[in-house]
Image 1 (cartoon, rainbow, N blue to C red):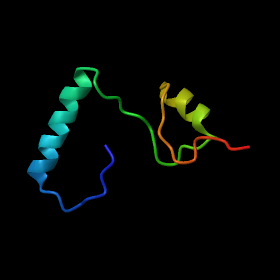
Image 2 (cartoon, rainbow, N blue to C red):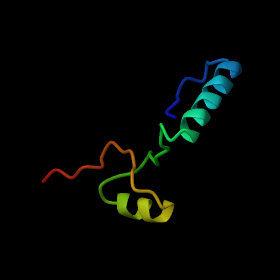
Image 3 (cartoon, rainbow, N blue to C red):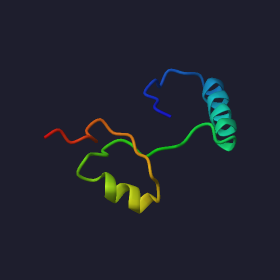
Length: 63
């Protein structure tokens, strides 16, 4: 979950977390590593975390 809004009420955060847990358990969402994932390091990140998907803003190499 990308969240930079620190002004939300704690009850809203709890509801959101519970909703995400339900969707995750149903296989409807995936949790992906992000933040610092780049074209140069995505294979290492994927291997170390045992994942096959990642999120990043610089993950595609343009030649």
